[in-house]
Length: 293
Image 1 (cartoon, one colour):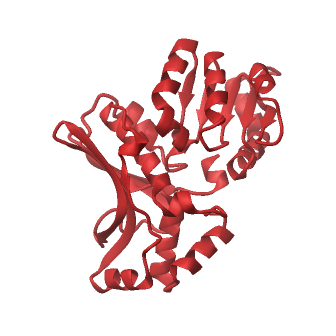
Image 2: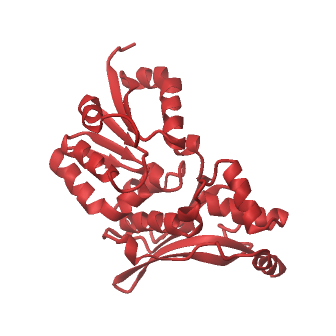
């Protein structure tokens, strides 16, 4: 077995970062057998420890799971300018600074991949960027935030209040201590901006995405949905409207027969509509450290 090392600089050691480091250790033998290189974490940077410059200089590959936009953007740009491949799960960074990052990757001879930034294990990024590359996409819509889907599913299945369902999501690790980004719809908006860029080939600024969250939903809203055989979901939609691209996120009532109506718990699902395939729906776990890692 090869002793050649693949040195990974890990930026961030929260829930996802810790899960990724554990996965690298567990799967090192398998990766070495398949690729001839043994992955190792050569350095870890958090907001309180580590030297970014030294970690980037030592690494063959950067994995960024710090979150936020600054100083994360500076670190990612430094890695790309050094010609390193970067893997990121940071949808806020990508949706706000995408063009700058793509340009740095091209100029430096590196690359940036971000499959885990949207819907965790669901391979929607790969399908749009590879399988359907060059195909006409008319519409992309789906459930892209596992936290809010878990909350709405709990409210529907157990009659729990919004507050109680949120508390359970936090207890299970599906929601952060400060869940604002998830429950406000901001997280889903950033993900839909990324999907829109891949689907339609143009830059979609996050500030142009109209979004609304679930904070104001009550058990009465859930009861109304049940009475009429509907499911209440936080739905993201990106579609062409004439020559423009419309991207929005908001709570929506779905008929029971809708393919997204049965997506419950922390699962995500994305439906892609294209003349090439008519319609395809991809689904899978959309929240949690191990799933994203």
